[in-house]
Image 1 (tube, rainbow, N blue to C red):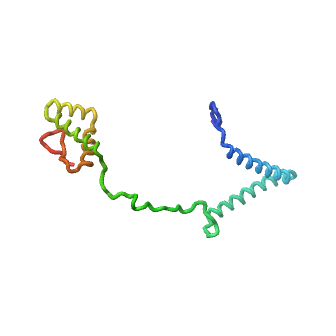
Image 2 (cartoon, rainbow, N blue to C red):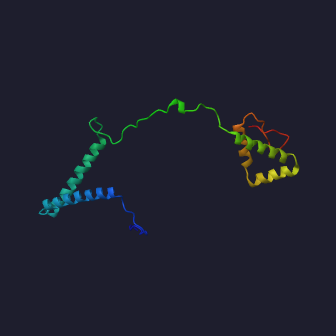
Length: 165
């Protein structure tokens, strides 16, 4: 359960990470060897007492650093420097943007819808399409109303009534 799954290739860390890791391991090994030499003659009870005192002291230091709000302590995070966006980058509220291709596409859509709405067969085709793709035509007409608000609305399901936006 705790074992790592073996994969075909093992990831190797970058050379810089290997170098830093090697240095840290060497320092840790030297410190452990020195501590082992100093405590080799201690009894088991003295060793346990030392570990408890060391853990308690380090925990107390962490708690003091966590609770202390004096200005002499430094924080790890700093306020972010926020650079304001230049005003000439911000576009005024001009509404949706469109181009010539949008205009031609929606003109072709209107022509196609008008030709389909002219006959009973065309209206049946539109209703069948709307059943296969519910909401598609409504979405297209909504987009058209957003881009071209001055165009008269189209109601594709009842030709005698106009659609309200």
